Image 1: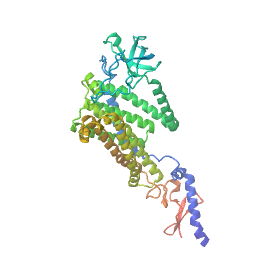
Image 2: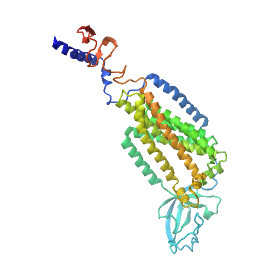
Image 3: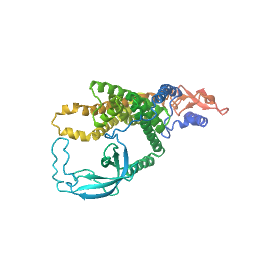
Length: 482
């Protein structure tokens, strides 16, 4: 009798579990937490997320249709700066000549107004390059370009260059070298980049390249022409940026609830960036017209709102980093839930925020250094200026970059807790882990499904003086008092 009392519970429980496992293999699979992706959220939550994102996506599509420019507006080139027709050309001959013979001895004054030193280049010969135009209506025409010894760019025979054409200038001065042809190295670098992404990312890398191409299409076919057509730059940036966000995130990460949470976090952060940017651009009285390129655009297209163009640049510039932050935080929450299915949303939020704080530190530093690197020549000029740090920092050309950096950084910082909280709430809703009340597979949980009604899952000892046995007839579990 003692042997029966000691052995029966274990034997009966084992047989109960075996019966349950044989009839419900899905329940057994649910215990293997580390061998697959996290279980999807409930249908109700997916419907709630869809109720938010589908109208948003529809609004973006309507915005694209309404604001679609149909191409850049036609205009006649002014011949100033970048607004010049260009052609391809080739250097066919390079010869050394006396600078005095070609009237190239006089060096231009430096930007600071100080006379050039010229000590290192005095007495050195100049270069006279013969350049042949290879495209356009004047293909085959040649002209000379003189390069002084102190010039940063020198030519070699056979080198491909880009020349600017000024039809109203005298015939001998209609063409001038504006740049060198960098087509080959740029395409080689792009191919290396694509190969690296595909080799490491595989299918996900291919989808990322497709998303990158789609983003470039939206930028060149919608955002830029729409702004040139006179549409509000802020509205165009919001619509175009939202379209890029939806295409890139869903194409790269799939049409899942996890991706939708990242989309919601990105959208909320973009709205915050737009609001802060608008407030501080107006408060700081920034005009957005701080360089020759912006002035040229405003001169050619007076209807463009330059201040709105500045705000649009802040939103588009922050979009790429925002995607990285929101996707990473959402993935972290999902993986933490997979590692510990019993964790509640508070525990998930705390663990994911520890990851997010490290992410914040690195991303903000990256954004600041990116802007500093782009404005490095400007920073060098201000470092030698006879002005205080406060005067330099509050000048419009520097204040514009400071506001751009800080507004974008605030949006990135806010995206971490916002997206993490949203992801923790979504991944925890309607999904209870083992060991929790009502959870799937907890010890002592009685199944009420079909023929297995009353089967106790688990190997715990019976309580209340009862034990679970499996009947030999029909496989139905029954309880018998001792």
